[in-house]
Length: 237
Length: 237
Image 1 (cartoon, rainbow over the protein chains, first blue to last red):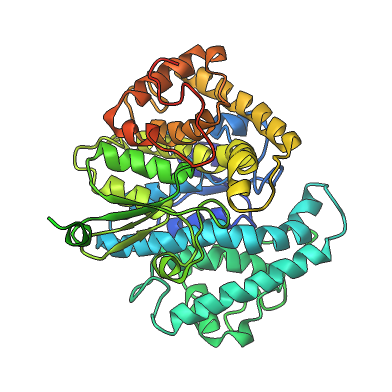
Image 2 (image 1 turned 45 degrees about the horizontal axis):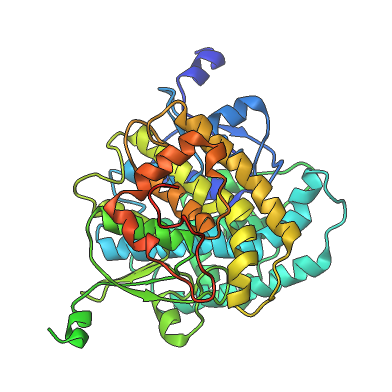
C-alpha cells in the first residue's frame, strides 16, 4: 500500500520523545494495542509545544501529545488522551474496576504528571536537553540540576515505600499509575540520572515494566546530539 | 441528630476557598447533587496544601481538594475527584456521551486547570491574597499582577472566540468545561480582576453559570481580611 494512503488510514500521534506525558500515553496505547503513526514534535515552549499553525489548529495550547484518529477526530492533550484511552480500554488493563481503587490510581498519576514533573522532570530534563534544543542556553545550570536530583531522591524513597507494601504502585495489579511513574523515570534514565542501585524495590519494579512489549518503542528513542546512557535500553541495569 | 454523629455519616470535602481546582469540584458535586460537609484548609504550599499530619495521611501530596466518603474511601486530588464525580454522574450532566466530544471537554478542562492557572490564576491570586495568607510577603508584586492581567486578556479573548461559535464552551451543552473555566474566573472575580464589560459573550455565559444552584455556595465564600469586590455575589454585574 502506498505510504501516503496508509497514513490517511492510520491514527497519528504527535509527541515529543522526552515528554513524560507523551511517554505515558505511548505506554497506554501500546498496552491496549491501539496502533498509530508517530509524528515527533520538538519542544518550543513548556515541553512539547510546537507553535506552527497546523499543529495549533489541532491543539490551541500547543502541547503534545495529540492523537488524530483515522476518522479525523482529535484527542488533544495528555489529560484528554489518557481518559480517552481508559474509555477505550475494553480489557481493563489500565484501570481497576473499583471506584476507590481508580481514585488511588489517579492520585498517583497526578503525583507524577504534576508534582514529579515540577520538582524533578522539568529542572533536570529542561536544563540538560530541552533548553538546548530550544536554543535557550547551551550550558545547563547545575544548581537547578542538583536541586532536581535532590528532589528525585525524595520521590524514589516514596516509590520504595509504596513498593514495600504493594506489588505495583497502586495495589495488586499493574495499572496506569505504573505507566505514569515509569514514563518520567525513563526520561531521567535517558540522561543516566536515576540511582537505581540505591532503591532496589524501585529497580526491580522498573525492570518488570521495562520488559513489557509496550515499553520497547521508548527504548528505541534517540535524540540526535544527546546519546542515552549506556544502560538505557538494557533490561539488566 | 447530634452534629458529631451527623459528621460521621457525611462525606467530607477538604478544600480551600480560592483554589480553582477545589471550586471546579464543588461545582461538579453541586451539579450531581452529592452532599458533603465542607472543611476549609488554608494554603501552605502551592495552592491549598496543608502540611499537617492528619491531612497528609489523606493526600500525601498535600493538595486540596480531597473528598473523604462516609464509607471511609478517600478521593485525593482534583484529577481523581473530577473523574470520580464523572463516574458517579448517572444523569450525564458533566460530560457528553460521545468520546470525541468528551475529549474536547477535557482539552478545555486541562486548559483551565494548568495553562490558565499558570499564566493567570497563580500570578494574580498568589500575589493579591495567597502569599499574604501564607505570610510570604505583605505587599503584592504589581509587576507580576500586571503580567497575569495581560495574560487574562488573551484567555478572555479565547473564551469570547469560542462563545461566538458555541452556546457553551465545549459545544451545545453545559459541561464540565464550563465549570472548569468558571471556577478560576470566579476566584479572579473575587478580587475584581475580570473586565466583564469588554467581553460581552463571556459575561453573558458567566451570568448563566452564576445563576445555577450549584454556584450559590461559591458566592457565599468569604476570606477574612479580603472582602470580595462589590458585584461578586450579584447576578447582575
